[in-house]
Length: 268
Ligand code: DGT
Ligand code: MG
Ligand code: MG
Ligand code: MG
Ligand code: MG
Image (cartoon, rainbow, N blue to C red):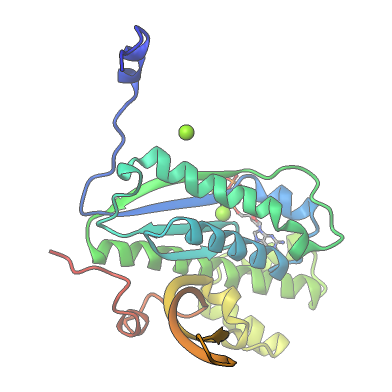
């Protein structure tokens, strides 16, 4: 077909295809969620409705983009990791990132009511996105460890902070002063000796964040079938289905990766 004289403008598009043999990480983060959380009365330090909605939206992203091998989320952020060999959208960074972020954002709004019930959504929330490439399993694991360590540091701080305020009767300024210069051990100690809280017994979803991975699951269904010249009968059929499973465990150490050896490809 003849090309129009305007066709040349296409050449102004920049090539943003991601380097081959690298994991492609897309991380999104809620815009100004400090304010969003306040205005939508998120409970402090953690709101399970908000976390549930984040995870549900992330599942919708994973279901639509099959090359995502693992996703990790905490607070108002989620990271999605595409396999090294993915050729989805010719590995174009802008395509991958915008599909992830727009699918996530529309799901967040679409499913809002399922998680927040009568609490209305007051304005359309936004999410930023970025793409980062990691060439080795070591780098990728360090990336995920970095996000989980961030989750841990923030959650420990927020847990002590809000315990001092909600149970200890301190003002927010007093709690802030109290925690200035404290180390993790000091924060654990405050929780334990003053409030009888063992931080390790706090819920794993808040301490570790949320890991989403694909897992095969056996599914048994009963089908009613009729063969020629026979009565209708029930036949049970077993099939393997790929399903997204949620975990709230440590991903910094070796155990998780030993238990799920298929997530990472071999470095070569
Ligand atoms: P940004 O990302 O630069 O546009 O600004 P923010 O305000 O989104 O900052 P960020 O992403 O560093 O921190 C996330 C904020 O979201 C943090 O201020 C607290 C809020 N947030 C996230 N999850 C919860 C929650 O479960 N409960 C409450 N109360 N706040 C939450
Ligand atoms: Mg944010
Ligand atoms: Mg920020
Ligand atoms: Mg954030
Ligand atoms: Mg189109």
